[in-house]
Image (tube, rainbow over the protein chains, first blue to last red):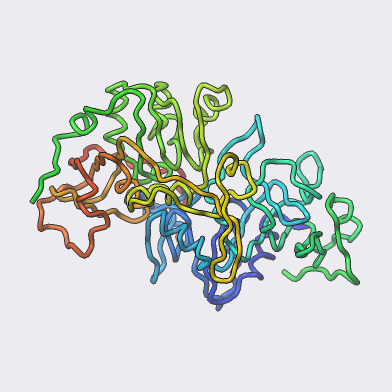
Length: 218
Length: 237
């Protein structure tokens, strides 16, 4: 079973040289720490950065320079700054190659819910609805089950949706799965030490298992 | 050259009245019009509708106007950092319309570009689409559904820039730019507070982000706190 950093490390293997990548808040942010040397990517932050760098050194933080999670960051050589309309313009126009974000629920047809629990938690969708509605390549980083032990990979989302039929791939602490065009979670890889049986038990939606399922490489 | 300078924040917001709609620039606490927010708190105008990406934190930014219950309605994309906001919203004291961030930005842009509606795929199939017209378009070989979203109509836009000149031309700095340029374009009356106000001729015309035609009032701001929401640093090795 993977921890948060393990999930991030596995997703980092999906990041290819030359990509423009948008990383959501939480586990997706950690992906930046595991992008292999020699793989050149440009990180987009939807508040208006291409070429976002690591956190600043202590004492060098700049109140005018933050990421979409409101954390102080730095700029790398070759970076650019733009306004919010252009930022979502490049997202809508599908210039950003890969979007990695978290989710509360994903359904077997690729719907995603990650912004609201009615009556309990309403933080807002931020840029997530724009991203999932336009991005061609969306990977979800999430826990396979919630704190109550219930599956978050469902036949149908129960929470208010963020977007429909958009998720392509999911990486959890147990597995890597993709979502087939005709619907269903296809199991691609198992996390180290995790059995197919465990993944079956943790998946409420339609799970498709074809042949031997390899253990994931990290 | 036309002179857009007003004395201070009090002067700039003097005709903002109860129940008006305001566009307020900034992302989180980054690039927010601190001086004007304070002036609005002191002026005690009530029943405001504020369109702003976030709602500040409990004791800073738009959170100050929430504490004093001066805001009737917020139109935002993300409000996660403000406990008082969440309390007022869940109790029904505060009316809240949550909209996608890109939709928010583009509805400002549309207003500044004189276009009454935009079409965006954001929110299709979700509760954001309720009551909205849905159109299907084929573009670049892809057929998709789009929501019709209206350009904002706001009485005032209040923005913060790094530098401005007396003609109202503005330059923003780093990610404090965010929503400020498009909100500046979208107000019936636009107020800009700047960290450094200079004479005309001092700014390079090629570097202007917002031309002064969009800015009706500009003033030299003071005492900027520029609070950081989350200081994240790394250690030197």
